[in-house]
Length: 490
Image (tube, rainbow, N blue to C red; front, top):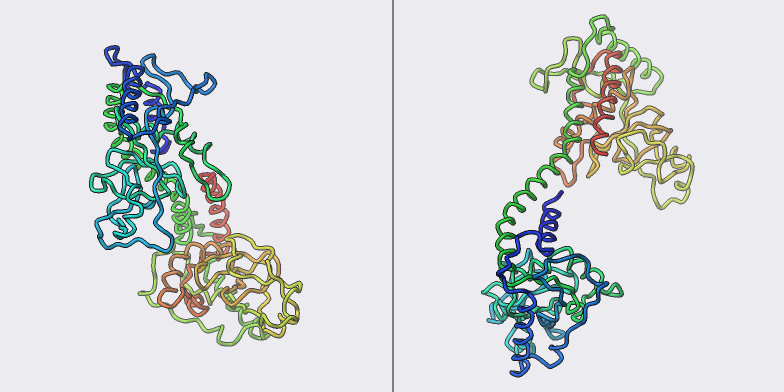
């Protein structure tokens, strides 16, 4: 349950007479209603109200949604209050932040049952003279009726008699506890009425006659005060609960990703599965990699410089690895190359059959298709690299930097994506290593107009290389654990 749900539940208890005990000595709400009617008659005589304000909207048995205590009564809002609209400023006029002495309350100022004072706007004297009748007093409540609809709150003393926006109405009443009425109007019971009464055509709007028609459960005045006292003793606890619940929800939402990153780190540091001294030493694997690269150089598929191995200094090593592992660079264990974007103005380059991937399509999984296809002509004339099934892809630029995928069907990519054809190592181990290293790649990419890790930064990045059979065991264990983590998100 969220803090708001808890508040709604307590408000519902309050308006059903279940929050505080009834006191038989209280003046019944029926007598309170008679006093309100007498007060309204007096105001009609004084010309403050109109004769039509004495009319009461009848309530049918079918309208009554729940039982209330015997000392309470059902009534319509128009029986106990009057509703008046605000006023927009004249067309072509504008508000000012210069203090003219005439404050103007906007819906954007109305927050959390009150009015924020940090950005109050004003109207000029000439505008005030035109709309001076449309003010709201500190004794009234506001209700928003356009844009944000149904927000209810009090007017701070500093804004007493400020002008009121046309997107809110004021509720004027007497002989009723203001804060009880505010809480009542904020309850789900009234808010559901607001939703049903709001027009859906054009700009949503809540009409004054609909507000007057709100059905209210009215307690005795003394009980109204007790309800408010109880509610206000509970509100700090509800707020504290809400903050704690939000913190817990945030933790629960972030926990799967934190666990995922933690397990990936354990994997690439050699802590996820035990080492086996009977496995082929990683030194033998490195020799096979070198031999394979030499063969690819002979066949013209790699350049001679790709055989060079840049030494690794002790200062570069970020963490300890098991005794059977070795440090190397990403460039040592694969053939890395970026893609390109064929000239978009050439009609012969697009709408073909060759898959052409953009970094937004990297899915941290296997990618089998692309939105855009290019032609064989584009593939040849634009010197694009055609990546094989099983190659590993990583985004090098912008918001997607560090996102990865495995090639599931032959494809080429744009220039923001780098592909690696692993040499004698398990492609899924490389895939998970790149995923585990995303935050490091983002750091390496900082400093320019947009993050950019470049091919050179990639091939020089350090890589902890385990024996090949251990790579496979790591991936198997990883995938078991990651599936369990995914269940936490469900």
